Image (cartoon, rainbow, N blue to C red; front, top):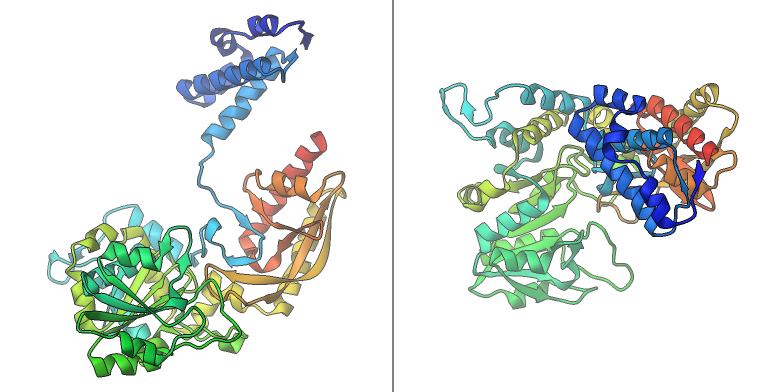
Length: 473
């Protein structure tokens, strides 16, 4: 390092790109990476040095070997995929920001099988004629839910807007004020209604809506009675709502279809595992819903999808709508969805093989045993500067489902000598693979419920890397 007396002097000493490219360490990089990538990384590093000098942040110029190291680091960041696998230690099972539900092994295999060659996506092998992509899952959905017909699109927001556009364009849809929900930043029932061309008719109050409110709003222009699942919030206290069964009777008497946006959607009864309050899709249809929409990548545990089940004449109207082509699923998602749905033919198999269901229904005793095994594995392989402590805690379902549910779990507190919880959190978040945990009561914690078995070896590598990085600071 050489101390410099002025910004201009330091700027003059920053080497040109041509001089950088002949350095031995950079020549090695050129052997390993495309020349344009190395050039871009070198220019980025030199530009960053100039910026630091001009801002007064740099008064000591790195030597050439240090600059070569900076280029290697920049190049490493450029070649790393932006979308990558993450270890989820947050305790949120269906974590929207982390891709929601991890897929079952058979779904992963199905994606690989279909992706590497051609497929019969829209080809009927029996007749040799053009087929429908929806046929690959429609039969399974009829079998699993008891519906007359089914359709799938790319997510539940798409399912809702397709249903409303097909069944209620330029007509009225009646909804309780307490169900005008927002799911995420842009899915808001009033705005979706407007986009579909349907006219929103609000009834009742935020906390109380009665059957008479719906009846009083029905006119000749009414196309649908819509019920929306309060997926990501709960209203408690002085409340009242019109049940789906009541609404269905009202709809039949008036000759008006009843539609339910079920949000997450579940194909198995989770109440034996202490998870109550979420009827299955089959139950919703049995209660009289004519159309039900729900997600494929939340409680169902499959890929991103919007699933629509219900009366055949209503589903057929959606299949004929021109919007369907813009909302259709791709072949990889369809392959994963079909493989996931097949698991539901055997409930025990679904609970064991679908990661989301397995995590949600895992007993606190089994989680405790897994925590012990994980700690033993890590202690044997990591230096004494990294320590582990068990704590009781709670997990959540996430994904806009069961907003009040808290599942008992075991948390592993991780400590690295000389590092604060905040430093550990930020460092582990930037390792490969990234590790996402949570800070609670000034402790960095990983929730064992959402750690997959295959995460253990990568977690060891990330902890080892984090300890090295933190020791260098």
